[in-house]
Image (cartoon, rainbow, N blue to C red; front, side, top):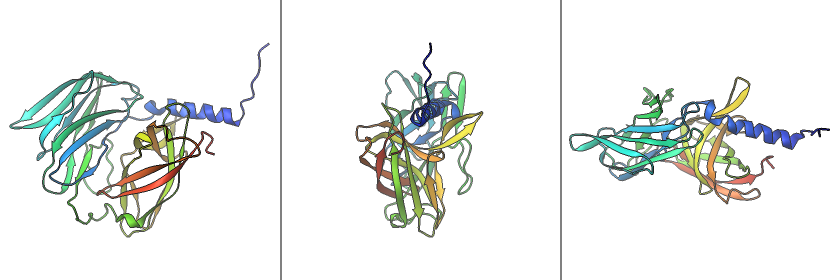
Length: 296
């Protein structure tokens, strides 16, 4: 005689969360982004390129990064298990490729290099080609105008001189931004934790949220829950506009922070600091409470 189980609310919630995370690598193609999106001109800069996921379920097997003019003294880091190759244009490195390695489709991976940045403020584009076996995804598109969001955006680095006022429509002074109701949903094991909050922009200019960081996470990505074909999944969001005098909400079922590789501090009942990063170099740090899988 078989034993029938009554799938109560907690069990149904666990099943839903399991399906949601299982769908993650299939929900959308991976973006490739720079983890630090702004820097002063002329400095020695460490670029960390984050591959979010594989290509529609296929593992990443190669990554090529094109270096923009004006970038010099490029030194790529060797990745364990990968073959490193560089192409030179005159006396400078113009292209770096890591190949013959594997990043599982459902795992993020970082590729690092150091370089000296140009001395002039501005925006640098780093076109990237991600290979997953025979499949190639070219993350090479640069916005033609402010606010445009290409389908395959290239990683961008904004060079802002010390003391320079942000450009119109870019970052606002940190004092005009406010975070409320910040919290994380901690899940068992090493499953990524979802972060939620409301961000208010009390300034007269729109701001662009580009990323987040916390000592409680190996890294944080901006994500959005999507649905299709009867299944829920997630896609990476490179940036999010916050209008002047407006707000955006990160909530279950919508936009959220994805805390990858959560640390021991991500424990229900505690609190962890989160630093939000904005175009132009502005940052804002707030404490997020940590709740359990049921959101309590």
